[in-house]
Length: 150
Length: 391
Image 1 (cartoon, rainbow over the protein chains, first blue to last red):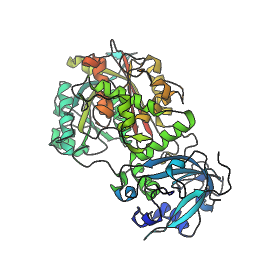
Image 2 (image 1 turned 30 degrees about the vertical axis):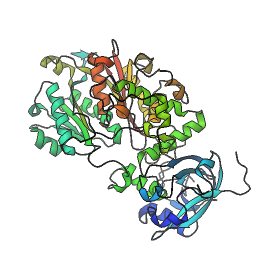
Image 3 (image 1 turned 135 degrees about the horizontal axis):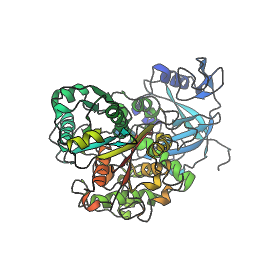
Image 4 (image 1 turned 45 degrees about the horizontal axis):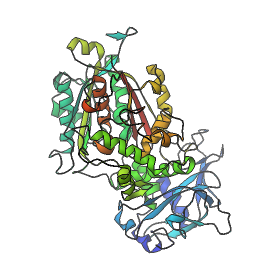
């Protein structure tokens, strides 16, 4: 097995495409610009992911996409063997990873540069961006060099 | 017939299709739903023309189709509950309110699908995204390859292993208990195919940490119940009505995404269960059995914890050593569950609870069962719970 998680850049074109419309489209559009942004309330500063139209904490509609550091750590993950999406499993089992960002919200993503067997809870990761054929881009994560492993 | 001067809701009829995989039901998705509905209505000793209420299933049959095919003539109450697999149990609350308020006299609640021979639920997001679950998967999970429920829920199972040391052997204990119970049930698809813990551990990965035998069956199956009041049941001479002592539903926060919960293991059941116990005037320790929605093995462990059968983090130990098998401290899924009987969307759990409380569960009967609990789990951990008891 390679040190990748099975959906390496070679398979990127075959992956399901990220959405381009609605709030989800806005989320992924930032990835194409090399940024990870999450929605935050301008009034009470609460982060919301997935994004909302009204802040559930303070009722404000002053919501905008704010940059985050892109640093986080692995919270949980799965390794998919069954061909739910045959093009994804064609290159072998692949990992889907939940990352807790430094700012608090969690995102479901995947990791590069580490095999599924090497994943551990608390693994420090840093965001990276991958182009997608005919789509915006995907925020993926890589182990953070120099960061202390748990 | 009243409790504290008030009439109470009860289940007066149950019905099921034959549960099967190959060669399939030979019916359409609507056809299996109708067959289960007719059988439940017949079991209640009434006629579809007398049934004046229905909770349409969340898939495969509309109120209009039920009315036109069953010959229902005087529908005065109808509804639909969209909580995925938590819908059937949650529907019992709507039906109870309808019959005790007088909005309807008889309410039929059918669900079913050709889950094996028809559209197999593989890639939830490739279907039209009509539910929040499907929308969230489509928008935020699918771009990374998380497309199906076993992947979504495996994220929760993995985190439980990380935080509490829950072992694969505990997942296996759930699978083995269900399989053991299926051996006693002529309606179980897995009857005649016993399974050991080693068989479970040797089964291939589906989506780690779930193996094949952590996953529910795909079957052609439908099940239904009829709800009325105890007073009506007595007047009609229904032989063994089962009282709906309480029903509750709940959703975690946020409701539309499983990964962003501050308390990661909080699910709909966490809030619903205490409400149900309070309304029924019982605690989990009073249950003679529990039929727990078992889409995957870990979900049983998590629901046992969140429904208060054991503290959070203890579920892995709770299910070991035969404790959830017949004869153990809390028999769970005495019919074999979704894991080993059939995936009738959890209504088969309600049907089995009724059989247990009628004392007609055959070789799987829990001696002298008085009170039983049924749970539902759906979509983003939506939860429902019913407390059923003998009158």
